[in-house]
Length: 390
DNA sequence: TCGGCAAGCCAC
DNA sequence: AAACGTGGCTTGCCGA
Image 1 (cartoon, chains in turn yellow, red, brown):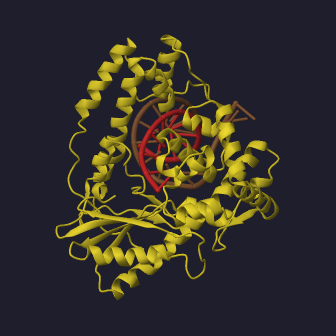
Image 2 (cartoon, chains in turn red, cyan, orange):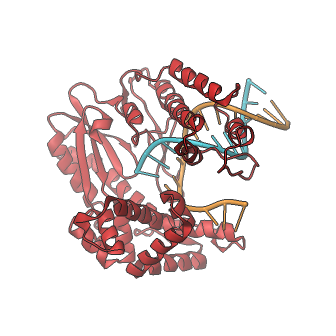
Image 3 (cartoon, rainbow, N blue to C red):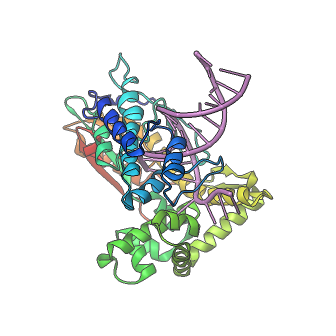
């Protein structure tokens, strides 16, 4: 597929070099001396050796860790320097990686940014996007969303975003054959709220938001090959508490533990795992005598059938999409894939029928090879820029 | 000057 | 000691 046509309309307003310099000056003042704010090593020495703050940890190279978790903890204790560094890093990241870099990729002939997709870029079967990577455009913060909003449709067209809702959890429910999860998806429930209700008790409709957040973290953890340490780090809770959640979860969904154990055993025996379509991902090192290497490969082998099946499904949809649109006399162009999302450019008077065709193709993409035990659901939205279309 | 590695962080 | 899956990009740093 040739990725076509994404317009970066104009330089994003707001992120001026002077702002970054200004924060840098404030940081120097708080540090009491000059240093390179972009150097984690120097920052760690200032925070933990010179200022004597507690809570630092040294990594394998012997340098102090200064990632956002560390700095957020320090900032919450009332320290200004780490808080300002977090501001600085956020702006520096957005400007260097996106605002500045993306503009150099605008093709003078098309006026658009064209990415490259590697079809075998990921071991699970996902695509990988590079030069530039258009699969990691910011969306989670307000400042970041301004960058996404800079991707706009030409006059007379709209950008249409169609994404699979919770496709990996639906695949988990399918492959692990979990009756409660299958029922929750069939009934169209909020899956994280439903999980919280099943694990912690209560009704999905009235679940405490804090419990829903925990259930969401558990759901993601399960897909990634959960550990109590990882869940604790993610939720900012004690390992023992995280271990309790995991224990309760597996008691409630024994089919998922069975599935994970069976997947590990299969991978150990054969050296590979399979997606629901039979495509294989190889993990020969799962037999390593090094416990770390083995554990890492076990987590990857648990995740690969889920992530890889989702990749197979969206690829099947993409293969069928061009013909499906043409047969319906629709002139929408498929522009981009972001793992569970397809972005189209569609004439503004064709948006509704285009959504209908795209949804039909995406929601039935597993068929006829695989008949899913849970429905696939596609959410769609259109707007003149990618932020509002998402 | 170029390369590779480490740290950090953006996305799903 | 590390400790949740898949990627890519930027900066700092160091050595060829």
